[in-house]
Length: 405
View 1 (cartoon, one colour):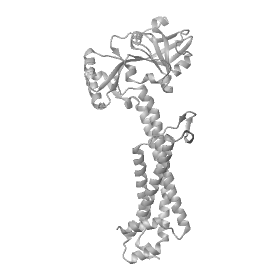
View 2 (tube, one colour; view 1 turned 90 degrees about the vertical axis):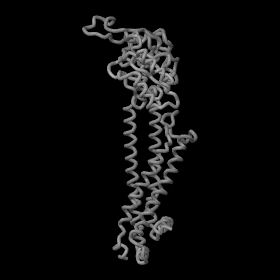
View 3 (tube, rainbow, N blue to C red; view 1 turned 180 degrees about the vertical axis):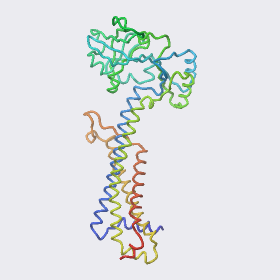
View 4 (cartoon, rainbow, N blue to C red; view 1 turned 90 degrees about the horizontal axis):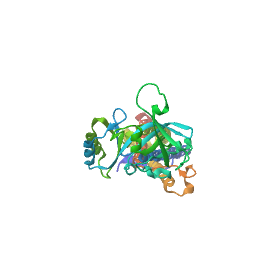
């Protein structure tokens, strides 16, 4: 049997004759447990918040999207359509036209809208109809629109409000001074048939309309579009399909996945997650100073015993290993206990009874997600820090200390 490990286990289980050392050891152990549990809970809470935030992206954005590389639009040729239809990994795709517009209704103006013309396949590619709070999804070959809550509230119109006119304007291309609104803008009259609710940014920005209506508004040519949204088959290789789409459409477009379409959000969330991890790791490091202190106090308390071991032939290296193993075991056991407590608390927030959950709003419990990688991250972090702390404390043992009794 490994002699240093055997002695380390004995020291870990036994109490010291000095009560102060017992108290310091207990405090060190509690610090490790609380620090580990806190780190896991925070990572799980942020993972839940991240998933909650990004679920809106999965509703608003397709799995892949072809966006124009330069300018605002491109022509989708018949040859490109044929190539897209032959790509096995594509389940469905939808043509899109997007442009900034000016909206007017009953004397109220809204200058910050973006109209998105979509075809009949769009609701099959993106689950937009699942977030319509009032009304229904639009029909093609009509002047119907679907707007976000923010636009509806700002212009004070509801669903099928025929008493209020909704006019959408877009500047005509060209140069020179404008003599009238009619000569400077293309305009269409529309009726709102639905109101969607995704998030504040999208609710305040987007107006969905039939693609033919938007094409007419912008004076586009047939098959002149801004982008294409793609839904992939369940087991399709996204990277391979992305390359095939790029080859089919050429260099006029850039193919982006959902993460690339929301790269700013992903970067912000990843940065915040890293910052939280570093902050709580620092708290763990501070807690592990107690482990160092506890081991050093134990070394001083066991000087006579260690001197006896040294005199019967146990090497300084093996004596160091005793306290290295003791600190490492304390960190690992405390980390496992902390992980267990943290896991139970997170599971309680996810699966527990409603009265025990923490709520953001009266109806929305704080989102949490248990991820295997977070368990690994926390366990590796406490293990590495515990080993370092134990090494720092154990190297203080030398021949002079053992002989000076």
